[in-house]
Length: 119
Image 1 (cartoon, rainbow, N blue to C red):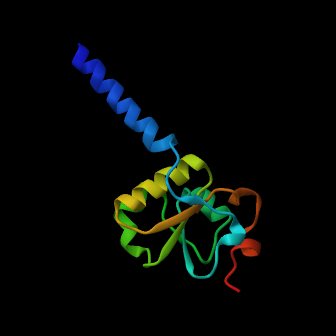
Image 2: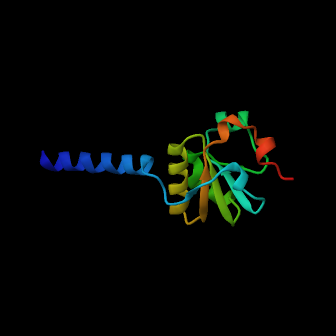
């Protein structure tokens, strides 16, 4: 019984850590993203279709393991709708060996065309 309790506590601790403990990358503002950065949008397809970005590679967190090879090489900035989504996305990408330099999660109130346009 003690073993099952410890196992349950270990799994629960890992899940809390994976989702809620901040990652070791910088939180960026939209103004800091340049044309040299590659934006990976890890929001759900329903959210990313409402405010889409022509510069962003859209791959939701649940699909990163399958489609990470579509991400170009370079400095990656993760775009998410919440800090939890950004944490999970950054952790998955780092686990896959991708260079993540930061994340942005203040995207909800600003249209993409004004803030992250190519020109």
